[in-house]
Image (cartoon, rainbow, N blue to C red; front, side, top):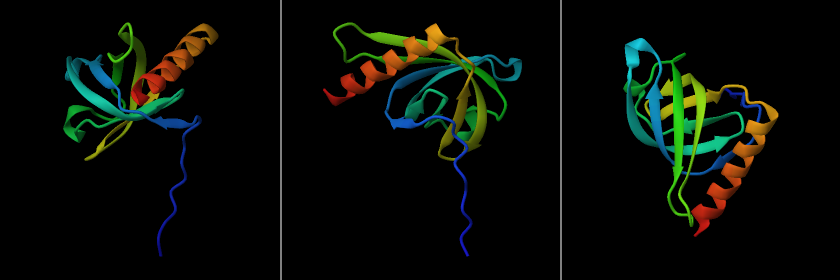
Length: 117
């Protein structure tokens, strides 16, 4: 019998591949590496980063890049690694105030539009 796994996400995720810099804030994982998002939403993202690159509960700063627009965009956000697997890592974003939420929604919308072109 198959086991159903409940999706614990609080917000919808968009299938969107963004170039991403991951800056590790933990002393045991200091450094930076690049990868891509598989999906992203207001509450978090899934990164296609190898399991050995991030540890569960690690604090990171993510820098998302969208180069294919009239002017390149980037967005920085703090996150916490909530799960890891061979496929990548699930991250939960730090709480955002209303203004940062508005800015992030706009960034995601513009990134989706840019991805279509």
